[in-house]
Image 1: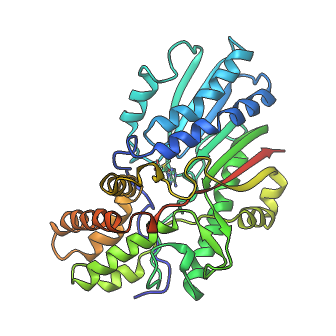
Image 2: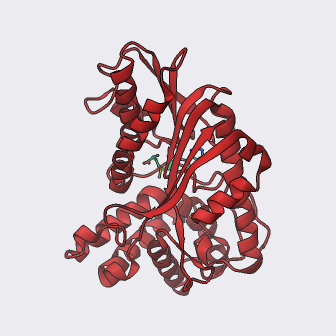
Length: 366
Ligand SMILES: C[S@@+](CC[C@H](N)C(=O)[O-])C[C@H]1O[C@@H](n2cnc3c(N)ncnc32)[C@H](O)[C@@H]1O
């Protein structure tokens, strides 16, 4: 077991059946619509074109709902002014699914000319647009993914929130560096007066938690830990692989997001912080699937689908593949994990409910 962070592979790859299992993200994008319209109103007419970039856009309807209000608000004010929409994500994103939606009946292409659509393929920890080109950048549910997977000496937790000692210090350092790297690139890409609106999973102060903060989604990660530990006990997973595994996430508190920007002089000189807050989700903040609580089978199906949608590639590449004894094993381990996870939620239901706190950050380029 190593206690040094080892860069393995990128932190996330394809999302499984994302569109069907991302109701919360779609609702969140729709709830940000007024905010986005107001920001576009403040930009005025932009020459030679208004450039919108959605970082970590994903493959689903939420990417459409994120840019739709910006296009509508700009069109209403400047009917003939050109707009460029750039969807930015990693190479493994399901680009065909996304552009099918963009051009489909629920998309935004029809009736909005002059409008060009582009993709930027790469990591948002690198430059994804030309300097001084972006009028409005958005990034929803994405920038809590760290730049790379990290193995730590982390027995008993698959989430950063319960890490202790050196492991906690190591991941904190990665998280702080990633946050500032992400923002420095966005700051360089923004035009003067342009905005970045980033909303991600957050944490809130909670004295009862080991590190003084309760992390969004903590119930799901405790459930993943319990199911994976039972598979270790049954001889299906290597204990060393589980002990070294932690999701490549950091869900910042408001203070972390603010203080880490403040500690970066280059960044602070480039951007003005117009808002940083952590708020509970507007719908079902204490249980993402509360509406299904009366039906444990459906409730478990929803939680299992949600974990598959955001965590499948991470679990496969960082837990099941390293633990497998034969090439066939990772699939069998994944099937067994999801079967057990589903049974776990049927039995325990809302004891492992997923609470949601959103951290929303608005920056303006000076
Ligand atoms: C949960 S999805 C969110 C998609 C969409 N923004 C939404 O709100 O539904 C997270 C997205 O972030 C992308 N992502 C994660 N790390 C990234 C990185 N380093 N660079 C670019 N995209 C990244 C993933 O590929 C994925 O599409």
